[in-house]
Image (cartoon, rainbow, N blue to C red; front, side, top):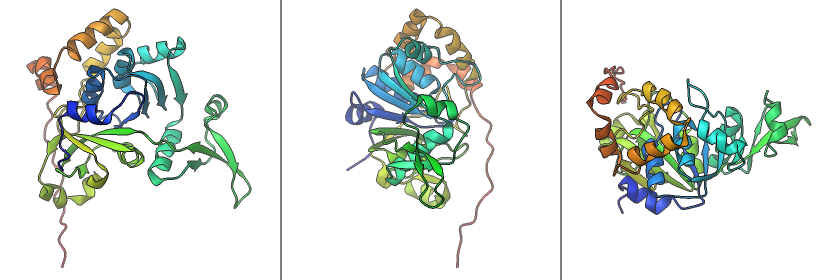
Length: 300
């Protein structure tokens, strides 16, 4: 059975109201198109987990998709606060759990390896330990010293954007590597969005770039420009202007509604969204090729 779906089909099949969703990606490869499709399909009561929520979760919270956020760093990167998420938390409308980056990734590692919790060395996150009861301590049976532990994080659905994959879902990433692998292995279901679907011989020609094996992937969605306004290394640049623009948009709920009406509900899919952005944005985000050196995988 084919794993290839349109993005709307994949979200309809695998993302249900009340699910714990992990949209992976660190700095680049953030699956904005999937977040927009979840908004369009009006999913509700979701638990949104991310190490760095970025604008994608600000928009999803603004659209009424979430009842809770689980995060480590929260902000509009390089600009300031996530105004919508912060306002909803402060108003008591949104549940939340905060971790250090190490704590969040340790939770995913526990989920990915089938462990109930993950031990951590004591960190500088003493304030987090005081306000987040999920941080606990156990006694190291070898030294008798206390060890900080965090519980496994097991998303119902992980959404991962990649540069390329084959039709079986063997997925390759290069550039900054985030928590994609851990999120995928920890999740019950995995949706991969990709800039390209390539022949398996392309994947086999450079196997060290394969971060996510096809056997854990449930859906493959060909979604060029999925990560905008973040970036995909080698395909298009980060739209810094939009991150500044969102800071202004998110100051006013009416302007947020207008944005969602025009750029999410008002377009059919990511292709229509990208066309609507126009040539000026397309040209501004073009990248200059910078190829890596050839690697010889030959053997006797």
